[in-house]
Image (tube, rainbow, N blue to C red):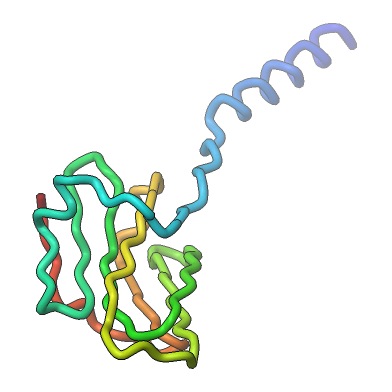
Length: 128
């Protein structure tokens, strides 16, 4: 009898593990030093903030700034929070920063872009 109970318990544990939701990879963001041609040709230099996306591909965030920019990304609920921090040192001309964003969780359907902690709208979204 003990053998059957133990076998039944192990079976339940295995079934539970099979039905468990697999962990999703956290979103990532990193600055590109070389911008892919398909992204480069779709950048609109008049827009300060642009988000580009191609089906089943990463997102690309283009941000023009006169200062140095550091980026980080987190997920909260269904929101993807992209944080850009601009340094206080300023150049004469704004330069483009291009970030590659990888998201593997389909539940993240809302983007919240924050520049120096303040939510900021994206000027243009481009489907490539």
